[in-house]
Length: 349
Image (cartoon, rainbow, N blue to C red):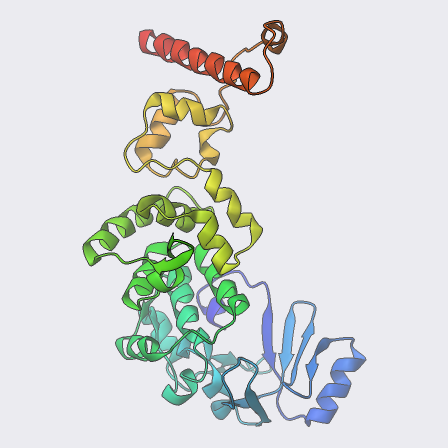
């Protein structure tokens, strides 16, 4: 319902079915070939539909599966299990009535993330990271009273898989700087990322001033780079963190590991350095091409859309009698010579 009211494209549907007994619901789901966890949680998956019964959930232990689930055929009570008011709205598909018991539409208009019920919200610490990723995806502000609750929830008992699922959503978000600020305010930036000293993890510890400078860079960079690796690239590059070590610690998807091959420059790179990067790829594919100045320079050097491919004859190099690393060193020498010649010609032109 949230994305419908925001005018966003819908890819999947969450449907809650009322006025049917659980055993009849299970039989109906099995008859259409839906898959799910059945009687334990009253949820089934069918194509791009999540089909479930209205239910209440109560925490019984520290693991994320430690919940007692009860069937409850009342929409107001069933909505209490939702995390934020904007996610607790429903529409009656038969008459089009909007069911909004907790002010979700007003919060949607005000671009606010607000919890519904304090006790229910605190039953799952993952909601802290859900709040962060929603703020970054939607560009919303977290209500002060909700942020205070989030600060009290420990994340230590959350599995890496659940943490990662929310982090990946955050990494893909358009408003990274908003989510990053909440990570900082919640003291989660240093809980998630840091340095490794003698094999021991030391959480990132930075001042508000340092964070503000980084976050300004992050905000501007996102205007030009939509790649999901951007946050990791900038955070690790800016603060000198080992990208691979942090990625391995968090057990993030392998698709993120290529970030360690992306050159980072805290200061402005020279034309020569830009040309060296262009030997491998057009700069429009480089994560470091994240501001207007670098983009314009790359276009002026004609390496934004195309690689720089100097005419280096391998057969001539092989006639020199070089072996192993010597061949690689000679190729590099000739590439750099070609770059200098190209830059000299460009200056003359």
